[in-house]
Image (cartoon, rainbow, N blue to C red):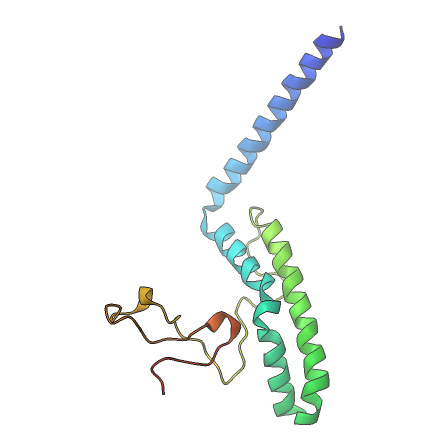
Amino acid sequence: MISLSATKVLIMMRISKSILLAGVAAVVLATGCAGPEQKLGRGMRNVTEFARLGEMRHSMEQTALWEGPEQSYTTGFIRGFNQSVKRTAVGVYEIVTFPIPSYDPVGVKDEVIYPENYTPSLVSDSTYAADSDVGFSGGDMLPIVGSRFRVFDY
């Protein structure tokens, strides 16, 4: 009698797994790939905020401009740190829930924040260069960490 009920449990587990997989497939087919991949990419961008420090630099710069340079090292730093923590937490949430619909941004703007005086260019890499046979190309050296050095601008 025990083996019969164990068999029933196994059958029920298989049926429930099949229903779950069918539901996930229906959600993916109904929404396509664009929503989940944008949500996952946005989450990955937001998780790397502390490596990039964009919110912190932006906040310190704006505080220095609008409230004075003496407050940028304290108030601006704390405001930027809080925004970085918020962006990182939202990024973790978006990575964990990327297959689940609502693919709209949660809690933060869907843009990468840079200081007002810096806009990154393409990476200095032969992939993006028309002159890759020469061995060097133009572009930013390391834009993900905010490098302001450009190869051919000087």
